[in-house]
Image 1: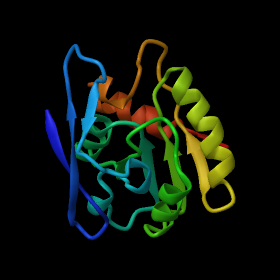
Image 2 (image 1 turned 60 degrees about the horizontal axis):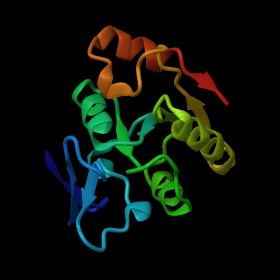
Image 3 (image 1 turned 45 degrees about the horizontal axis):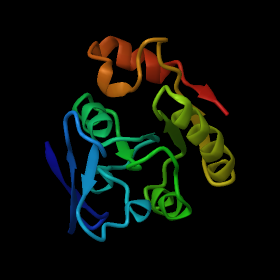
Image 4 (image 1 turned 180 degrees about the vertical axis):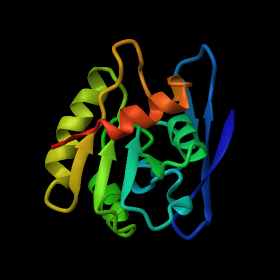
Length: 151
């Protein structure tokens, strides 16, 4: 699939494509500064919380189910992305990074980097679930988000 990426002002700034059975799995338009963007940020409305996920599919999946979310296009939140997040004025950020080693390290770093600006929480996925997009049951999505832990 190929998705367009917009900035907060809804200006098209690039694209991301996911390739099946290829390395690298994700391809981005030339010159795209991933660390300065939040995929889906142009769709965020006033909300008490915003979910932060790694990939575009996770952000779209959560959005389709009514959960405000952005993708950081990787496993580590940059300082520029934290600054962008503050423009949405969430009272809480919910970290939903992948259930793997990179995601766990990303959560550890993000909680420290973000805790002075937001209330930070994180979700815990069931043992065999890697990310939000793998969870197809809407009631389980709700349970995962509602059972989040405050850092």
